[in-house]
Image (tube, rainbow, N blue to C red; front, side, top):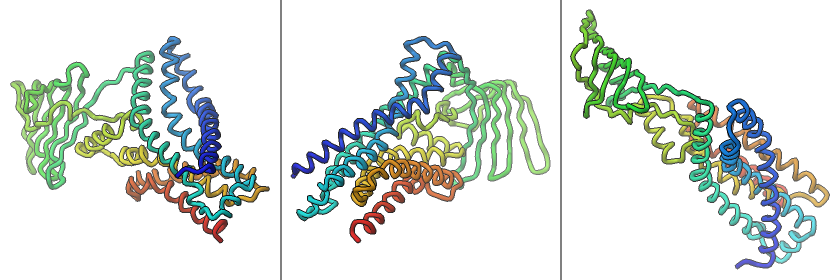
Length: 360
């Protein structure tokens, strides 16, 4: 049941939240995107319409960071104001517990966390992709696709290694292709062809040379006629998919991780970013609870400390996230643990503060 106090708390929280998100979005846009946007538009002479779109495409990513910060400011300010007006004391004197008192904040911040996941999945990734297309179009960025593919057997030994260049218009044709075949850890054959074509279900090498490598001798022969290789991996699985994580939704990022693992490439960075796609939106709930619990414990004469507390919490979160990311990339932390540790640590500190300052 929603009480009059709940409605009053939600009204105060929502007003502060909307104002905070707007101000934080403007600050983040000006400090992180505006100068880069001006430089890109100026250097590449991008017309007004695509330049405007390029700037607007940054908004979903800005909102993803502004919403958690806004929830923190809203909790710190709204609860502190009620505390100054002795409303918190009055409500607690009526026998209402603090968990029940902040229940409306929990509900609305949880809803905003789920909305942030949707923004990240269906707003941030498509917007970043569209911005990248505009940038490539006007900066005339040319990317020469390359293939660096590795295949492993069931025991984990390297089986095939393929290096070649290709063309986006003709993905079934490889140029300057080199296929290396392994038996456990030993190279047994190396084939180089000026061209390799996909003849489902195998690759066919042409115009090159082949080396059969044995422990005590190496035999070579020219590849004049088409040579059928044992590699049966289709063209779409050979392409190295190194798209940045912020341009992919969670499903596409999972597919990229699987592709990297199948080709023996480093993927812990993508695994970490996959879990951050969910842990970062839930900082909205974490920050809202931290702000509420901290504000309840402050005395009336110390309300101005909220600004410093808010800045400190935000800095602490991103410092912790940077540390755990580094530990994850080094292999010392599992990606899930690394992504969620900052949320868990800050929530634990706030609950400890609540136990010491409020319930003591």
